[in-house]
Image (tube, rainbow, N blue to C red):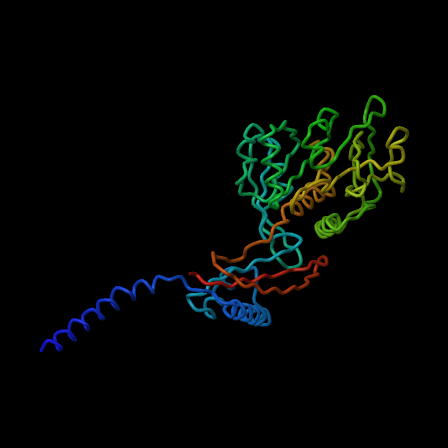
Length: 361
């Protein structure tokens, strides 16, 4: 009798221990092994190549999402991103007044199709007096354009601008500079500009016959390709001011001014024989950001189609440093697969597609 009672007590204790212990084990985080990562990598590669071979439109988020969710279990999350010379979506912030903004949006438009891919453009305006907003560290934009504006930045704003660019942000300035402009530290930070005096006034040229990247870096070449696609009938630039501005490193000069088939150069002084820049690109940018300056912001000059397309090209190029997330979500211990394609309807453009898979928990 006593033994039977003890067995009953033991059974009750075992049940109680199991009852209280199971929930504790159920809350232990899932341990992701190396096999899990290898399995995810193989799965990502298989799905990525299978979807691509089935002519998936990688720039249609609904199509990509539908196919992935039909192939993956609910416990697996995903992210698909792409890297191109021009992002499928470029958010542009114009630091300009109410009169300049319609001119700027007329130049940029709301979209452009390049290599058969629509590239959407979202424009918005920030007053020059509202730069505390436009240069904050968490600004949701791809490129900031100073359109005929030359603000004086505080030390904090310069630091914010540097942080924005180090995270892949772009800056474009479109302005005919003066010596007091070039003296500001942020111009030196982005473009390495110096002012050279050559008489009482800046030289001007009414027409240029050539468009040449004499010092064509990889990034300059990307901007040139975009320009050529946007304006295939280019015959020559008109009415750009040849300013008394030069840069310390000629390899960062994007476009050179031409007159009569030979480059315009400085004569005499420390920059004797150096070409006068019309545009300067990526002089001294930290991280993956991009910067470009383009001379002469006179509104009656920018009506020239070649000048408008050059500005548009520089803005699209500067706003495309970061990869573009097509679809995505948060995940842990993700595995990634990549394919690279080439589109060339308008110009040679590598298209990189990255797929990451991971677990929700």
